[in-house]
Length: 160
Image (cartoon, rainbow, N blue to C red; front, side, top):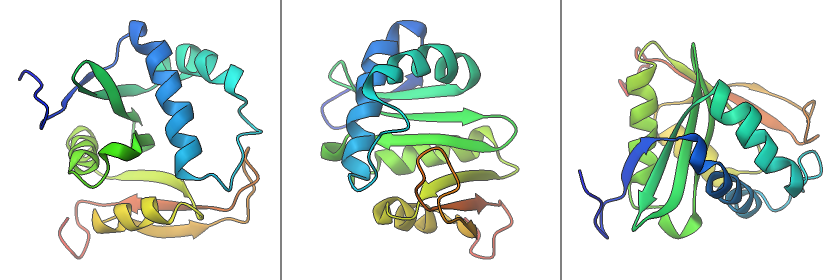
């Protein structure tokens, strides 16, 4: 389906996407949780991470609008939603929901993800999509920031 100004396309990422994907990753991560500095992952490490870890180890889907990458989803079998980031100018328009639906389609048996506790918008978003918080941490991670493990099951009580 060709992209239009109102409908971004979602496609599998390819190695040539690495630079634009790294830039998007850095920018949106910084916008999403500015209270958590990226000291564990300085800017100069993002492109190597995308090239050497994200693209080879994850199933990455990118959202493109008017030739520009505006979001991405990274999945890892058997059930990990590793990353879902959208440029803030494109939130609240259904694109995040499309990406979550794609994740559920790819892993229909269930999903798990980690989100920072300070990323209140993400936590609300995932709850709306049937994810449930199952574990809270005190920041025992690379970023030293409290986070929460959330899971989605196709047999959730709300039927999502």
